[in-house]
Image (cartoon, rainbow, N blue to C red; front, side, top):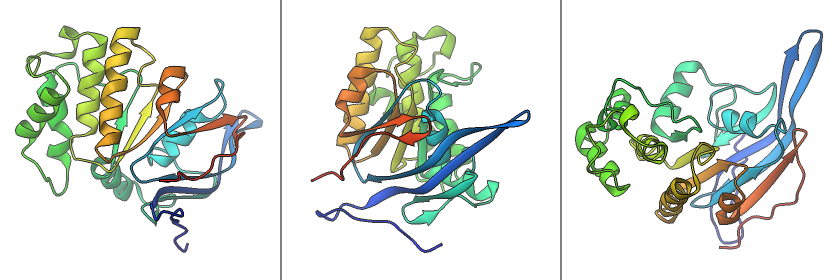
Length: 241
């Protein structure tokens, strides 16, 4: 496939580009059409929200962009490289070094400390750019958890666990951060802290894509795509700056 990566009028690169992205899931004798030909472009350094009712295909779309699944049809490009037909080994390398993931349920390893959880992705990187322990300490301190380095997840609040998860997602300094309902399990005060952290990450130049039901979070995005029945239901223009 030829690269379809684009730039808007001000020259910002489209770091994510999907074309005719389709995902069909067999369910007994029927087929569930999770995504129906989704086209989108997401540009460097912006925060994009993906909203829509339950079952609209939001998490499916995020998983495909992140290389956690493969499409039935269509293409996904990350920085001009089509990942839709890559091998699992190739996808694993991209996920570890170019994409950070934040999940609603944190997915921290319960037997590891906060610092050990954050250091783990660096230890698995094929070409580590950082000292694992030093990088983990720096990120956790930046997110206000410098006094929680040696606490295990069970010893942390929900908001603190999510900030550990954010630090882990940033461990290898990925240019792309994907978040699936990052405030969904948090109280309003903890959610506001996480929102502030995501704002700061975007302001530092990382491209952030968030699936959310949280109106406050969607309002902070630079642009918002609305999915309904596996299709983009609103017209979304490229950013102007």
